[in-house]
Image: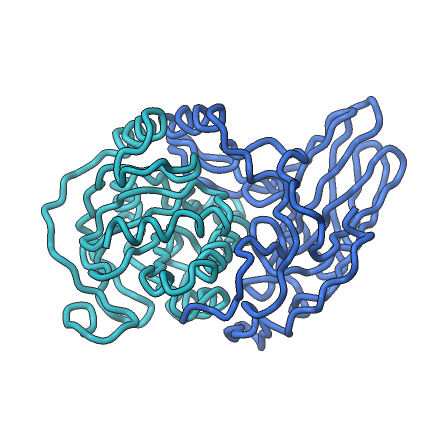
Length: 218
Length: 225
């Protein structure tokens, strides 16, 4: 099981187990707000406005499954790389694919540092996003991007721990309404979030920040 | 206008799909992407930060936090793939494009509507040559702050103003695409307005990024695998 044993990349999924503190979404918002208003909360360098530094938001405890059938946990993200984490779904025609495409371009733009960054999308539509559908969808952007599924209630709870609002899909009339998260979380080994890219951050903007994040956090 | 610029070298055929499977497109990163971003991104400022603060407190992130549409971000020369433009009556459409679908039968269309008339107007219907089903959409936030796309009955275009259809905001959702769209294809988008005006615009299929076929990285695109 790659999730718990060392193996050559990609992907490796080991990490120190840490004590998780419950962080309410509302508090998370305040943390983000203060980080933005009062300047960088970590890293010691000035950040552009589209990246919000936070002081490690603890990894949620939930354990999910990758599209390849391996166990996956926020706490067990790669121990030698950063992880860009997004909550989205494959039948999302607008923001989700745009975000993934921009992440792919951003990694293209940072040379060897891209080897130090994993990308994971946790499905907010696990009922309809089959493993195969997630895999083929992510392959559009990069075959190394990982897809993860779990029970939707746990996905919602985990996203809240990172201060990212998502909701369980709803059936209303003939519509099936699904949500996606706004920002993209940057996780360090152990799964704590140390910052967020705003929704709509361009590839170029991400490329400008990622190398610093790699140097400061690995 | 971008239409006056030389055509880009077409990207290699990518995203080829058979049935419901999408084959990974290894060539995608090697294509030239030299257009500027759309003008809505590069607006870092204290004001925007303050807005982000307010929105973060409310749990609202995303389209509302983006800068208003405008030309202030178009600092770089327009050298990218030409996007579609057309006009009818007082309405002028520009920057029309369609991202290559990630899910084979579904994509979006983005464009900017300029209303030169004094009276308010509204986009009330859209059709495309790529499918028989196109919706007007928005991506409002739910009470909890989650982003959820919804079909809307109309998209307002204020008199003397403009409305940009873009990722995270108002956009057109193109459903049930019959034949897979790939970079280089062109789709006719026909827009019907409340005033009765109809405008048809040719929208190229471009590689998907927030700016549309834009090259933000400036470097090579040989991938990072």
